[in-house]
Amino acid sequence: MPQIAISDLEYLVIFGYLILIVTVGLVFKKFSANTDDYFKGGCKGTWWLVGASAFMSAFSAWTFTGAAGIAYESGFSVIFIFLGNVLGFFVNYLFMGPWLRQMRVTTFPEAIAKRFGNVTRDFYAFYEVPVRLLYSAMALYGLGIFCSAVFGYDIYHVIVVCGIVVLLYSATGGRWAVMATDFLQGLILVPLTVIVAWLCISEIGGVSALFEQIQIKGLTEDYQMVNSATLFGGAYTWGWASAMVVKQFIVFNSINAAPRYFSVKDGAEAKKAALLCAILMAMGSVIWFVPPIAARILYPEMIDGFAISKPAEASYAVASMRLLPVGLVGLIVVAILSATMSSMDTGLNTNVAILVKDIYPKLVRFFKWQPKSEKQLLRYGMQLTWVMGVFIILLAMYFAGQKGIGIFEVMISVGTLLSTPITIPLLWGLFIRRTPWWAALFSIGCALIFSCIAFFKVPLVNFGFSHTISDSFSWNFQHQFFGVLLTGSLAFFLTIPFAPPKHSEHRKRVDAFFTTIRTPIDFEKEIGEGNDLKQLNVVGWFGAAIAVFVGCMLFFPNPPTGRLAILILAVVIGVLSALMIWAGSRKTIAVTPSADNAPSCTYGK
Image 1: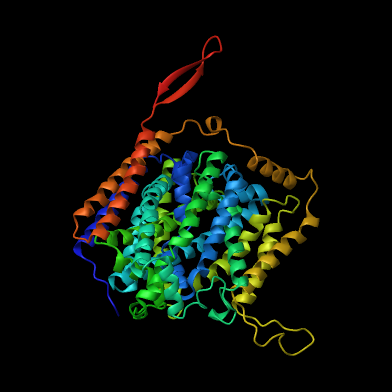
Image 2: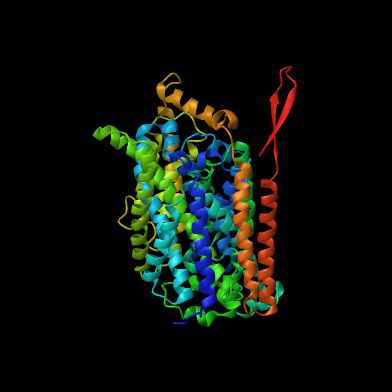
């Protein structure tokens, strides 16, 4: 198995950066005085902070392992996954983001209770927790693949060690720490991945040389944006691409997507946050997959030698390690580690919020326990984060033991067969009012039946005959997804005639829900005083510290191109951080009415 040498300087960079982000978590821990602060930042997050967090939580190390493996094998077909994300965030910007923020809840099961009732809320609360655990485990597994490829360590050891590091961070500061570290991680990840793509193209000889090499290597057919059904087992066709885009769109525009905007101040800020996400995701959908394509041309023998289930999933790691200068090699490791931190931390925070806000109160009423104070609930939330983190580590180790299957296949199966059925009614429920309280449950039940048929690959029987409709038929991704989508949607629509009359309690609750999500938030009346400048100041100074940290790498031994890459990264981070510090240091003008009703001004930070 090939190994990539990591110098002591790289380990120093990794260690120093981890210390820095743990410090960020500890500093922002002081922002959480109660469970609302811990789970949704007290609804005081600014658009740039929430937007960066939503962007970072929308992907993980899987992007640089599983998705990179797809790009290595089939070129830019993988972009369709992220185009769905871009479309989803853009619709959030148009109108859905404000709707999701204006639900005025702490967890999405609370919103479900307002739309469908408490029975449906209980189902989602108990169903969603294990599914989110699976997704977090897959993110950690993807991180294990990357780190094992970089260091040459056993993947099980990597999962345990990295899982503990991620858990140590994620249990500290709650939502405020998540948002702050997500922003800082994005501040490094975005320009650093641009640098990796630039170095890859430069190594090949330019963009035109890249396409020439694709043709010379005989990869033209494999690297078409949309492939023939005869390649890759029917994947990456128009059907696959359509299913992937629609799937990702639904994920970003249903009630269970709402938590990404619960922390933002109001609907207008939610629109800005969503637009930021759409722009960053559109950039990432191109630049993230140049390195694995370049690796197919530059380092195919090395990648094929990796002793992991899908060697192609190490392609981004190989390209980064071979081309980045000393110092940035360690930084790309911690940057991708941070991507998984964001995904895992967000998943843990959301899960613990459901346990504390939705499941625990029900247990208190059922067992007639003494309700706990806010401070006790906050402490329980931190403890539950540790417990759930252990489960995630164990699940990730299980995935690593499944030989011959890559993380992409695992994620697709879980997302299509387990998550899609419960997401369908949460999309239609935002547009269709006339349904009974059991509409979502009926839709889920029908969709899950189809999921089971697809998962166990039950043959489609031509009734009246003893043989199947097609002996060669097999359940691929697009068959599974569109089958689940159509079944769940049709079942939801079939409940419309059974909707109770307008004067019923259920219809009144639904009408109130729709009125609420369409009513703009008055921040001063509903939340109170914001801390926008404090967010700019604190995050800006941490960003400045990172810029200095990166700038120190100029003293490492590197060729001129490597020093230029380090300088560019340091300047980009430094300039943005300086602008934040300047903006956060400005004085605001507060207008108060005078005795004769003429406005007068008082100044304050």
